Image (cartoon, rainbow, N blue to C red; front, side):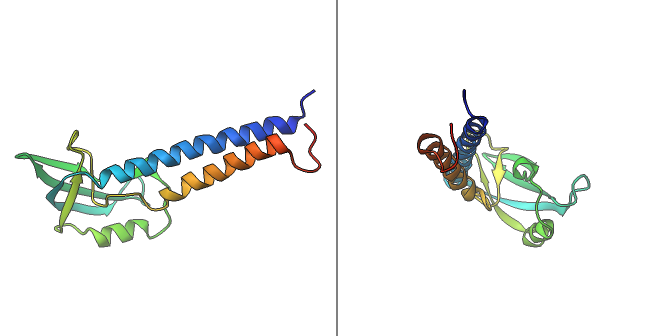
Length: 148
């Protein structure tokens, strides 16, 4: 008969593996933005989002290949940021400011003002990897006091 702890460890290990894969994709996506072309843009609007006061609403206009674009800056997964997050972005990118817009050459409507790996995104991969390795080690070698 299989010990119920084995099910918990397998689930923990699989969650660690999924977290590692997710973290790796975040890192890869962030690194790709470093290769995106740059267009000059202007911040049209910079304020608190009425729907979510913890996220800023930043509207940027820019031109790519003679076509004008106006896009709202997207924040990943509608994160639940700490207080001050919105204020920091509103202060960093006030309305009327000229900015460098990094855009996806395949989809110019996908933009960022801060290319590279997002704040804290780099941490997801190693934490998932640690959980995966710990889970595999525990399943194979076992821990004292756990009988499988």
